[in-house]
Length: 252
Image (cartoon, rainbow, N blue to C red):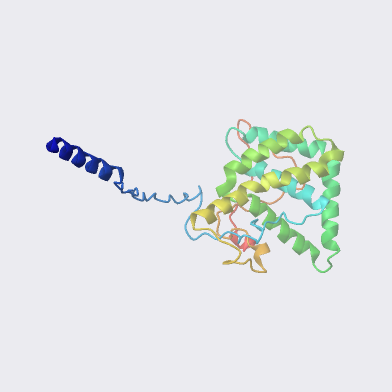
């Protein structure tokens, strides 16, 4: 009988110990996930110069703070570059769309050019040189090759939609669509900044002269603007193409 009681007591003691057993918690090991740097954007190269981002995150371009007349003329300039520089399957469509735009919007474009030139004349001095210099920088901005594919796709879309725009709607259309033609270039700048580690206004404030800095060492083509002249359609035999010359000094 005593042996039975002893066995029961030992069993009770063991059960009590088991009920107060502490279970150790094991913290799972920290898994280190490698940070994958964004790839260098197509057409970029180490050390290239792009505009410094402004405090609001945007980039200085020739298309900022434009009057309605300037906006129309800058849109026309962008599409002019597309008609001269875009090649491949969309080339004929872009050229045809550009020529159609010149025809359907000729009075609007002529008035916009005259009003834009008048804005420069109002500044006094050698306004023609300032105007020509501004147009050279504008054409070189839109001819930057790293953003060419996206720019040409955007230009094709703008021209397709522009075929349905009435002359009285052209100022609003230009204001709506010029940012779309500019976006491929600012997106390239943003992608390049992300690749090289980015810039923030606190570490890299925009210098006062940044408005004239447009990717100075980005490969570009200097394209002389056509004074509302249609671009020749590709044909067989192929007519000589406009001569495009490199002149980086124009945008420095």
